Image (cartoon, rainbow, N blue to C red; front, side, top):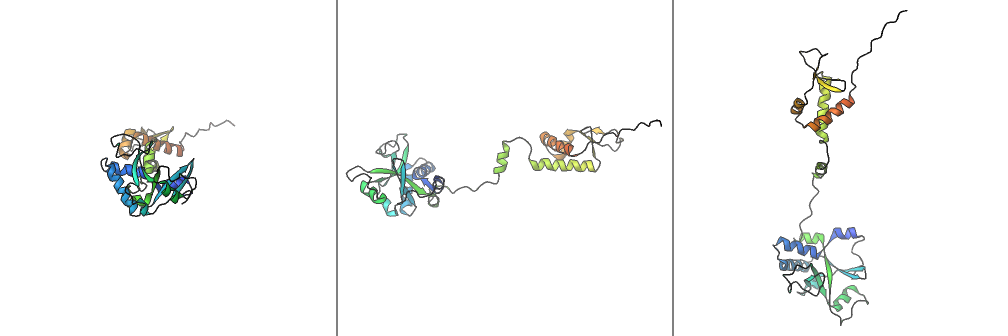
Length: 249
């Protein structure tokens, strides 16, 4: 018996899962066959699936870890109404009550497992305790699906809810635009990007066509504008050099 099978609640939730959650999953996976969920869970417990019983005494929780033989009685594990554990699912199978998979213990067995003198005396009725299965064992026995590995697209999924183009596409276009400026294909004047024409003197460049750029670089308007803003911010705009007026000496 132990006061807590794990040091923290977070560790407990990671390593253990309630039998109710397991039973509900098996029931849903088998078209609502809650009886099959009871049988499969009991078979796993008899086969060595680790389990813990939770005893709550005025907010003070303690745990016991029964051996597989503990689950041998056929009515040890049972579906009960979470609001009134005396009501079994077999008797009210058509009721939409919060059914929970719990363990039924007589007072003598309860005192034996938890070694507490404050527990009910033998003349009092039995108790139903919450059951927890070791998560890894439940997966091994096919009661739960295996945990999913982290998906590689997690970052891209997070970006779907944000505005702006993907950084790699935007940066690629910015690099290609800079290369066009260095080779003389484009020029920057008055904070705008112009396309140089081989047949027209450089003093009369044609305004760049964003539509043509979008087609050339296979990108959307937002991506192109972001790339242009990077280029324009990193290149000095040429200005006319003021002509000095000669002064009379």
